[in-house]
Image (cartoon, rainbow, N blue to C red; front, side, top):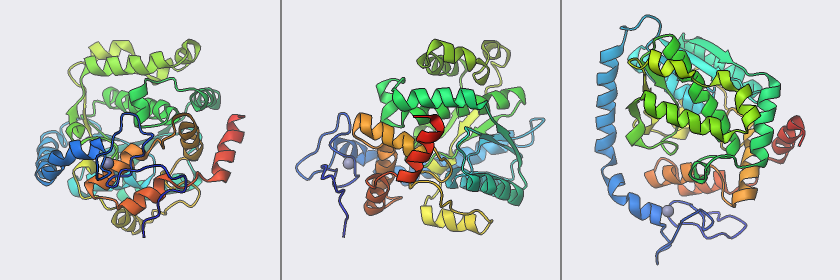
Length: 341
Ligand SMILES: [Zn+2]
């Protein structure tokens, strides 16, 4: 039995996108325009994934051991996807990896435990970076109340997450540039980022543009205070020939959430009981989701989860359960209280 959401929104009969998702339309069979558009690409997906695995093999053969400090910097949250990516890069390729955690002040205690357990089990160096609470609080209070980013961004993530992830990307890239590391790895799920961008050399010009866009979205005073979290202007010239590759391998490796959790548990990783259904590491996520749903009438993870349902890496029932359950009330209240909202 499929459990349709209680609020009786019309959902795509294939992928779970709701009628409230901007620009959506449904055909006679109730299948959405996104599903129809993806049909051809999905049919070719197995060959495409195989070709990306070959590309990663080639890239790694090219860079491994040839740079002074590390082969890769990994944006590491302690959640299941980034833990699994770290394991894959370490065990399959034997890379020298520096795992970097952005401490946004809402990393769950269990995530911290998992971070230590996994980096120890894999014998990987780890570093965390924490802006002071005043900065984190100002950033999250603002983005919880206002969509400061352009509309297309908000189809993919809440304003709170967009702000946080924007800083994560800058901090890992900055670390890679400063330490001459040729690769930056992310644990994006196969629904979060398209395969086309799964192995990509970063470009100083484009990076500068997207960083400026992020910076400009913040109110002036706040952006000034956050200056040191962005790539300094001088770096775009100074390091112009050594911008790293960005990779997110889960776009092209087999992905099965339960199998991933089992593999991680064998290393001592524990599924947190203190977070919501969409995050295994962040205590702010449930509140961020609720703010977004109230403002936009669709869940900020629905696009990602719909992509995974469409790709067949998650069942439609699991997707509905993740997206159309109420946010955990206690967690929402916890985050609100800490932010003083
Ligand atoms: Zn659909």
